Figure 1 (cartoon, one colour):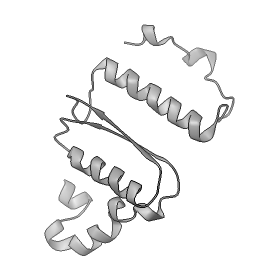
Figure 2 (cartoon, rainbow, N blue to C red):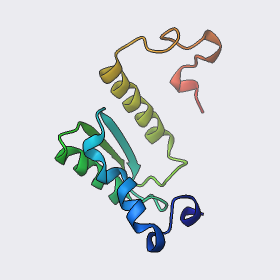
Figure 3 (spheres, one colour):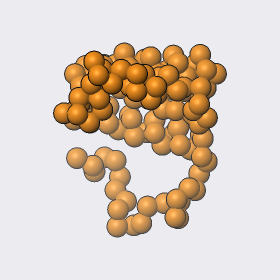
Figure 4 (cartoon, rainbow, N blue to C red):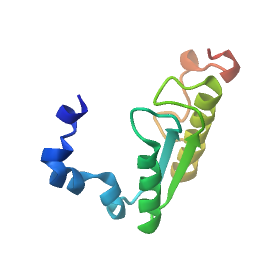
Length: 117
């Protein structure tokens, strides 16, 4: 699947290098939030670490959050809640409050976090 959808390093190495985000870090002009599970068996955590370093070398702002013991998906509830809070804080810091159509969710979709299962 990955060879078909992204490319085969043996055949497409030049194109993959030219389009790799880690090689384009200097062209990124917005702050970047990276979050990665330390036990991800689909995307190695080294990729997020490399991207974070490349952004730093390029003088770009980035934040890397590593979740110990988490895989690629289906994280533990505590990690999911922490990540959502981190995303919220990141967006508020860089966008400010009130972005979106109304700045709040419609009443029908609001639910306290302690009720989310």
